[in-house]
Image (cartoon, rainbow, N blue to C red; front, side, top):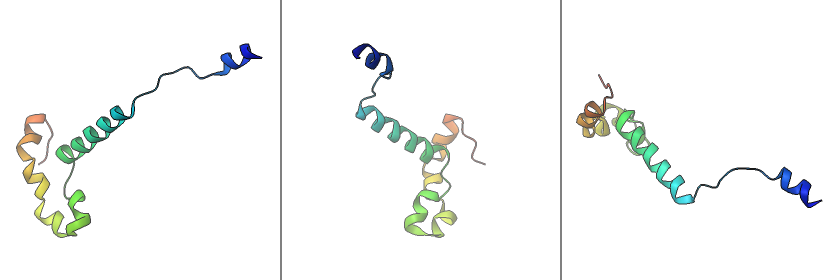
Length: 71
């Protein structure tokens, strides 16, 4: 019976939780720098966030340096 159990066990590896956290922070940073056009701050500021586009202006030069088109 043990031989059958070992054949059924999944083969793979576990990723430590800290690496999942790093991945989530990296994806959030990528979104903020590359794609955000007011969506993030709109939860707090409402429609004003889309008009002022604060994060877009904050990361403007970083976007161009990283190769993101924003115009």
